[in-house]
Length: 533
Image 1: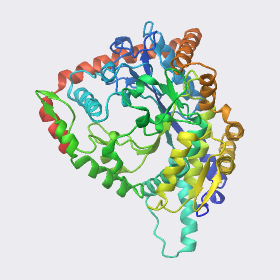
Image 2 (image 1 turned 180 degrees about the vertical axis):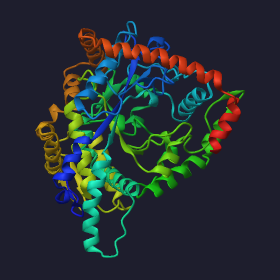
Image 3 (image 1 turned 60 degrees about the horizontal axis):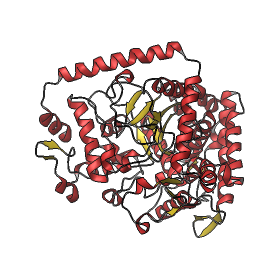
Image 4 (image 1 turned 90 degrees about the vertical axis):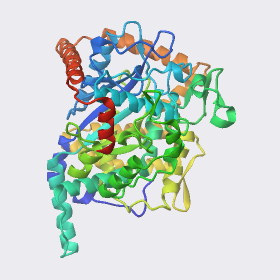
């Protein structure tokens, strides 16, 4: 579904610009709960053989001590990214005894908040800060919400692209307006990354449909909430969901909180984004003041602001910049501009051992490039409800054959809207094929059309078929976790890679000890300086 007010700069992309697209780099951050053989969340500490969660570059944890996070380096090779993830899974599977890596975004069987252990990062000031931040998330939103897992996809275009692309747009602008003043390259990059972000939010409903894999959840996730509160149907005795849902992880059942509902973070420009996000990090919230920061000698949260730190803002996409030692992310963005973007809405595909595929990565590249080349008016207050409605409808009932999406004043059948968008994305896929001398990108887009034609081919559709056949969600995920464990155990070991992970684990533990020994401030003073920086 293409916005009629949008135009495209695709016609300006010549051979020189196209050639630079082979330099796209990406990184993946993939989460997964450690679980017992009985599908309960693991209560064990992060294994020392995996290294320090504070300092290891590739294996860490997110909210919970049991919530593993695998991080690939920045790579230019799509298959290399998947292979790296596969090796991280294989190495970890060898070092967690009889436990399994849960293959789904929605969690295993839970026994309330207290069954979810908060991650421990050691006794250094920075490690304590990371733990207290997560403690704050627990008291603010509940631990159960933090047990959800996902995939973050980081995407960056090379400087060669930005230089060539800027030259084309500057030439056009100077011809149209003799008084045109060109931006600096960093400002140009930031402006166009923010344009990509705005268009991503406009069109991301297609990703929920194609890759959403959480149409159901286990009853234990709902806690004491009543049927009226959660609005889900009992599909099996312990499995709740909605028959046409795609990604309950991204619904109000997943990342929800009242404090952020009124939060308006602007994506109009880098300056607007930094200003509005900084306001949320400096304004106190009454409900958080009631919780307190340090009570009876124990820290409950880092501060009483709407956001403790930038990462607490639950956005579906973020502008990012690699930070220097001791630098806050928002300061890095303000001072040096956007370096890459982070897509945060992807569910783990439980049918894939690594959680995503090379084909999915290629589609994401083509989709993000389409969002970049689309020149659309900035989202106004009147069009935001349309964007939110379309996202919500696809999340809650994306496979419903009667579903329509809103486009201005008209309602468009979902299949028509999705096919139109895929056809448009094919244009950037063809550019990527040319840059890589292949047909893999156009093939990746073509494969998504099959899911539009037959919703049963989507990950959410595959899960619902199993549920409709009488299988509980927990049993589906446990079965797949066991199969993936066998798969990783049967892989031919990359001895060199595994040895490098052993060395990284040893080095990371030593680095954590050095940080703990090197602290000169007490944590109270350290936190005071951090909050006021």
